[in-house]
Length: 293
Picture: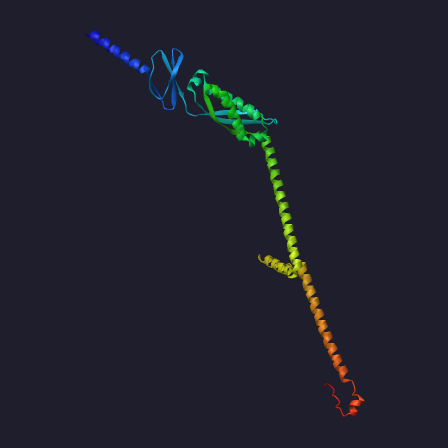
């Protein structure tokens, strides 16, 4: 009786161990590649699955997108400038059988091919293109990687240049170039402003020529603006001073003309009083005009 119990216990233990060895759980983001005696017999979907212990081997493959940093690479651009470029790549497995059978370590393989592709693509561009056309470089790297990894059951979804390190001498040269470019733009803008101001002044001068008082009003406005800050010095524009002088000359001429007219009138009156009466008028009994009439 005791031997039978021992046998039953042994059988139960073996069954439990066999069941534990045969049960596998595949997560939702995984797929399992089942090998039986070294041959691929199928793919197991997420959930609970059973294998034959010591005969079957189940390799789980993650289907999630994997982020892979591409370490900084020392690259010489097409215009012979040395730069250090780092990037990041995103890929995912779409065929778990190929990712297990076609290549030993898919992550290491993609890392190495990404580094060499980054060096090759960036080396075909100049420094200015590398800095300004990163989108086109990213697309080129992704397309090359996608063609290389298609037979491994992997799709590269995105590649982005992460950092571009320039030599200090090149940074200083680019800073001088940017400063010169800014100065050029500032001079062009200032010249355009001077041109517009000259045009406006030309139009204003035409208006002032048609209306001379406008210049005087502008001078007076300038005096008001000068007196805003409580200045003790008053500056009179030269045209205003000349106008004042001309006004004084005009008043002097008017006064001299009035004096001349009064003198002429007095002289005419005196001449009229000194004329004697004619004989005919005396004979006819006409009255003789008195002096002053």
